Length: 382
Ligand SMILES: Cc1ncc(COP(=O)(O)O)c(C=O)c1O
Image 1 (cartoon, rainbow, N blue to C red):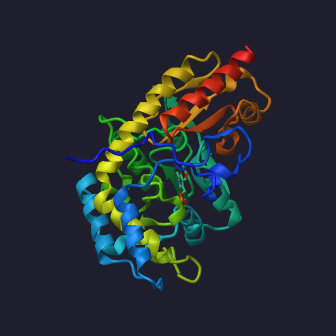
Image 2 (cartoon, rainbow, N blue to C red):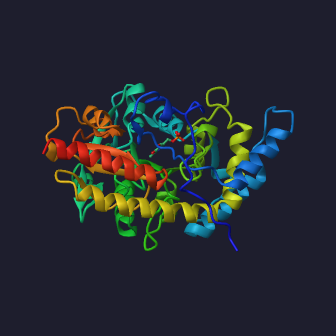
């Protein structure tokens, strides 16, 4: 029988140099912001790290064939996507790839197409290379926020340019459907684009009737145009270990990315050990995690929508709720909620100041406490 993992456990991260917890240290503000969870890492991963730490030499370390084989098998099993181990590029994090892609493919003045509402580092990398960003507007169809493919069709990018894409979408948590991905793939092909597809939240699908589909797996044409980004960091709560990977089928694109160890550091040996254990043994733990997160999500959606002036659309994936607070007419939404004792990520950082992003990857008791505080603060100004 599978062990039952305890996601209700309250773990004190106060003295663990956690970015999330340090921000509000000494203040009565619940940290519901940056995207890591407060859950204990799966025991098998902890064990693998302890085993590796027990060996007293921590020298330069190879990526084991076993890890690549696990990734190849995983793509096949989950997505019927046949990849070659040589397509896998190990990276110390996902964000690095945005910069590598801009450096590889961008020219000064180019505009990188990307979702208008998006995880902030998407927009920063083009700026770094004196490029600009071209926001692709979002559509809110059936309360799912996705990029507007009609707009993309009517406003084609310059051939050869980059487009950044995020599936599942952060923020908002939409999981793109096959027909949407097919249409995007067709546009990318017709407009002659290179697609950087950030799929870091792919294992955090919260509903049994939805599933992730890597856009690169759709057909050999789009596969040749894609840089697919994945990592164990969000799913298995390993962000502090720095381990991610890109899948790039196109050999010349892979070369252009120039993942040179003098510029992009090796993945460290603990990150590699954790990734291998996560992909070998972590599925059951993650199945239980997703069920727990789905229950947190259900609670949050019901409660937030019962507070006048707030709105929360269904969240299909991730542990990040995108709460519409615009109807409250607040001058400073982040400050208002901090004063109420809840530290969320400001929507303005993602492209929409009328929203706040709430991280519900934590024990239910904290979600309940945060909602109570939000409700009391909003009711006090009604
Ligand atoms: C969509 C998305 N991409 C990338 C990252 C960051 O990944 P990494 O820490 O591996 O750079 C995050 C973290 O929240 C994210 O949500």
